[in-house]
Image (cartoon, rainbow, N blue to C red; front, top):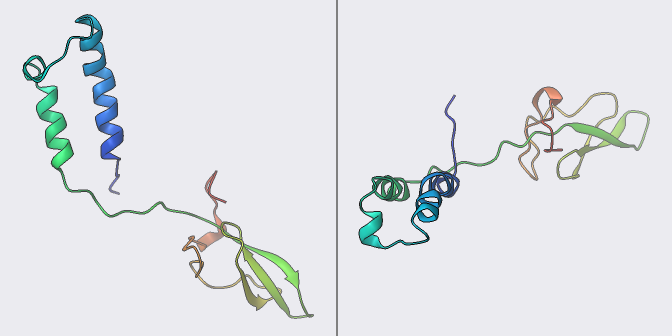
Length: 115
């Protein structure tokens, strides 16, 4: 499975590890000429020019019976966005994703912090 990282996060981590330490050792001295000695600047430029992937966070939720409106009908609530859908009171909706927020409702498995 492909993993994605934030370009801003990796640039920040590299600068913290290398550039901040270099500036500390050299008493805050920095200039384009001084930084060009180090290959980190080239790496940061390459990372900055890479195309960004179009990804979205994988949000999981589950259907929760919010209200039974008759002996066989009920309102089911998305645990992520709290939108209600009609369904059979005894059976969770068969929708694999919430129409409102796109939360993945398969298997009812919720990841910590996403519900």
